[in-house]
Image 1 (cartoon, rainbow, N blue to C red):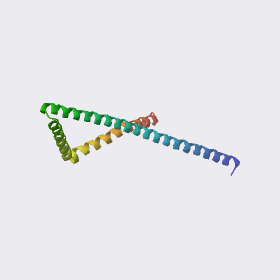
Image 2: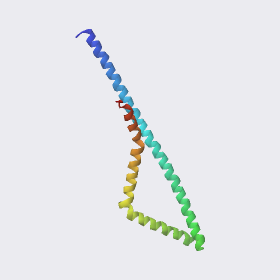
Image 3: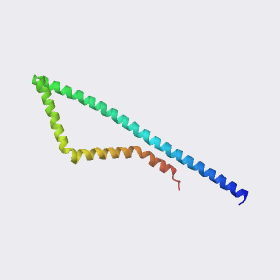
Image 4: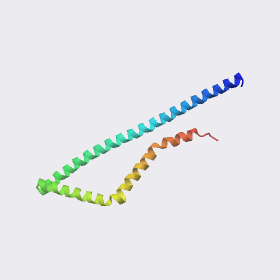
Length: 131
């Protein structure tokens, strides 16, 4: 082999190593971006659920006191509220397998794909050559 051929091979090998390093860095950065988006989404959802539960508890207590005022008895007001929630729990238990689980899983998967793969499609379209 000539001296020139070994220099060309060494230069080519250096370019290949540089390319592989850049591709690995790109993959790592994309993974970090996806994880950060998912974590941000989870944190905001957990905050929304927390405040929704707090509002629900306040509404429950308000309902119990309102019914207590109507029935002139704290025991009857809170008892009626408990019966209302017991009825809701039984209806939810009966409908859980047929409707609620499917709806929640479909909504979760749809939300994930719409939110986190929209950017990938835009990037792929940007990378395609224009004819």
